Length: 306
Image 1 (cartoon, rainbow, N blue to C red):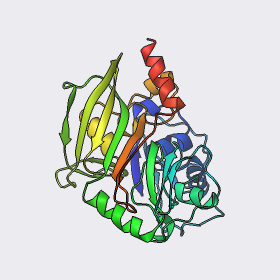
Image 2: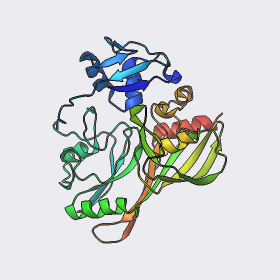
Image 3: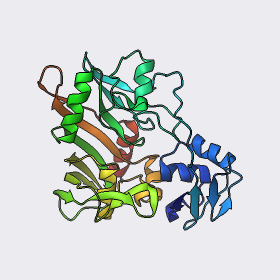
């Protein structure tokens, strides 16, 4: 069982929607688990996905004995843009709501299946469900990903990410204004002691380094440009939440859902904007850029108009 505590900001939401927001599972997957009797609310089995939650309640989700990931017939992912394609790599601009690869508990679109459905042949290196994947973005994060097509590219790119020679820059909107307009967050990240779905700054976590600079200050929020030196799961979300400046639209890490609703956001304001690395085929340094998509732009415009 995975125990989740409902934040006050999700008060009144349907349990399927709240659990999906808190765990990263697809909403339909949560509905299936409810149908299987594997979701408890304050210790009682949930019967209806429409049941409403209250702040402070506990949600228990049983994911024991997961079934093998089913590889269905791939489909092209709507909204996924091909930024660059050659014999060794393909660079995609991933929309929010799309996973990097298939996984247990996720039945939505993913990059790997989307590329296969579009006729791309990618590297066969890596686990069966994530072949060619050398790094990942959260489902709710949009932006640039590079996928290996050749076996040589897979090996060299995995090494580059491991050796921290890949330049990864993100844009994020965080709540409030940081004390310093720029700085470095060096705090180890590990599993959250109270939830298998979350990560946290922990004494025994893995070394994690995030650099940031303020791009623009708005009423109650700051737009930051972030450079990741390491690449831990949820790193940006965890580090800024630890500073009490969570990413806007990220209730899992303490963001105000009222503000997100006012801005029309249904996910965290986080976008992988720039990606640079040594091309595994020709050895040249390459750089790619992606502008934030419409939902993030709309949120900025709404704040600027206040």
